[in-house]
Amino acid sequence: MIIVVKKDINEEFIENIKSTLSANGMSFDVLNGERYILIPVAGDLTTSDIGRFKAMPGVDRVVKISTPYVMASKSYRLKTVVDLGDGIKIGEGFTMISGPCSVDSEASLDKIAAFLSGRGIRILRGGTFKMRTSPYSFQGLGEEGVKILHDTAKRYNMRSVSEITDVRHIDLFEKYIDIFQVGARNMTNFALLKELGRCKKPVLLKRSVSASIEDFMLSAEYLMNEGNENVILCERGIQTFDDSTRSTVNIASIPIIKSLTHLPLLLDPSHSVGNFHYIPQVANAAVVLGADGVMVETHYNPAYALSDGFQSLNFNSFERMHENIKKLYEFMRESFTY
Ligand code: PEP
Ligand code: MN
Image (cartoon, rainbow, N blue to C red):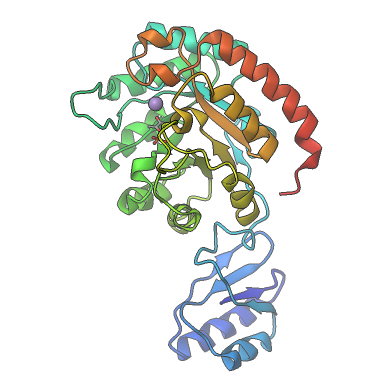
């Protein structure tokens, strides 16, 4: 259950609730939400327990919760906007993140960033420590790639995002990268989530191909529970029997997740669809469904990309997709109630 306490009350009331809970051996947390102070209490409670807390001064209501996450839920906050400075925000308007799958060279990334920033894209992606299925595939440029991404993003006044795969890279990323990305394969790497939860920089958390929405929310809760409330969710498709796309884009999850959480939600059509032919249409769907943005892989010449060339858009198709997204967003923006 959650004891929902009014914000403007005397500290004494909170202390009273806490000491009653402790005296009854109940384990709890106190979360200072924007709208209320929330006290989630673990375990099954009887109706009389609930009645007792309802009657205490300062308590607005006591709710039985059907979700095991609290901070990621809408009862904690209605909306989170991640502010990256210089007017760059995620959770307000429609955000486009783009760049190559992997940072391949300074010259190549420069061409891509010049094109994207020329189109008004403010967040540059690029893998540096890659999670490849085969140990023989390109593993990323590592630290050199991180520095190239940083320098390029700076040159074009963009923000950078790159996937972090190892807690030992946190210092390096803290120094050079604006948003930590947790990849689908690491969504349940709880040791990594806990460490990132103690960092200041935002985390873009991707859904694992085999995670339920509840699992996904609980991973976000890990980050928030450690103190990092700048979490951006990214849906990227799930594993099904259908092999016509790389993963299956479960588009209904966008309105569902938006109704459960205040956190911004992006769709990654690149890794879910895996084929450049269909990515623009699926990106359009993200707008219509009320996602807060998309993350799309782009390369100046996808044939030269060191990873995921087949799912990378070239500049022409990116431009066409972007024009459509802008029109669709204008058309749709008034209709979202999340
Ligand atoms: C990526 O965005 O670079 C990536 C590897 O995606 P995912 O973790 O969703 O597979
Ligand atoms: Mn990729």
